[in-house]
Image 1 (cartoon, one colour):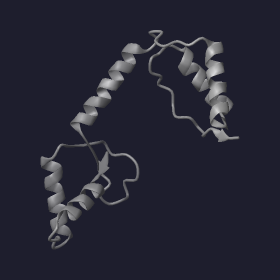
Image 2: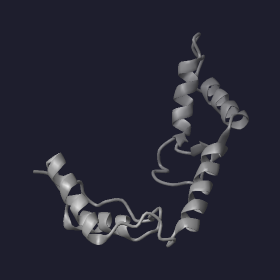
Image 3: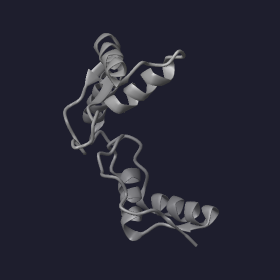
Image 4: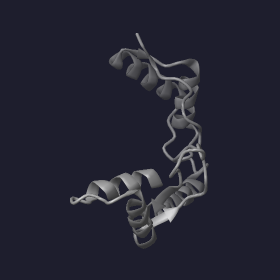
Length: 133
């Protein structure tokens, strides 16, 4: 994902002879976005900033669609299920070998990932980082 501001900066950087003024830079940016592979995304985030429109490309959108489809197809298919005792042993071993400690919530997430059999899990990001010992 890029913002219009990112594209504007890239357009300015790509002009070795410089650009006369901001209006020219804006016009060139509009052309790049119109004729390039850019797909405008819905508004999100800090819209009070100038040039905050967000873009991606159709190939990225297609890759995301494919991942979602695969995730839905594999959900609850009992793929790569690890025994609960083996999962705990693997987590403990990882903590010791990397000199860190997972929080209880992180351990629960890992245990679920290893034993739920979903192939891919749709859980949210971990709330905190593992703490070094």
